[in-house]
Image 1 (cartoon, rainbow, N blue to C red):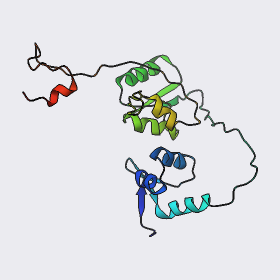
Image 2: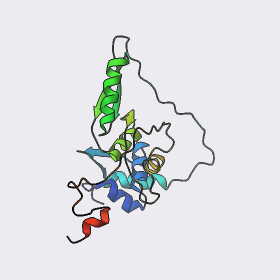
Image 3: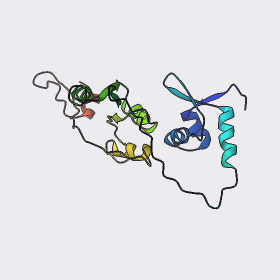
Image 4: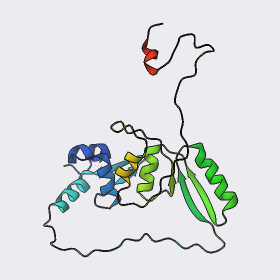
Length: 188
């Protein structure tokens, strides 16, 4: 492969015949080197080859086990500890305002990105609190299938904040008699 070629996470997933989430997991663990261009992660062809070569090595028969405990930075008493809150839900704005006013020593930082990007930021350790509203087409369930697939081995707590009804606003009296999404395809 040429040194000037780079791939997106989707392309890497296709090449390795794995899911995009697996690619993000390899990147998070530092097994696959990457860099960011705007909002997109990129992997150089040389780094992909290095990863493939590293997985061909002979596995050890025994490996020592270790507990990985994330280090928590200490802040001087006069400074605030930042908490990164990521997502587009207005409830997160309310939470950030509440924390700022009522919890001394905490400084909420807001990041406005979509649900999947919010989960990726938590996965990468860049966010402390995220919101999601992701429908899993296979199960029909919201959020948990994505959380379970992406945050493997992570400690987290899921709090259901609210439920919403999706629907249509129609003219008074519903003159076109719309009752379901299928009715939108009906000829007038």
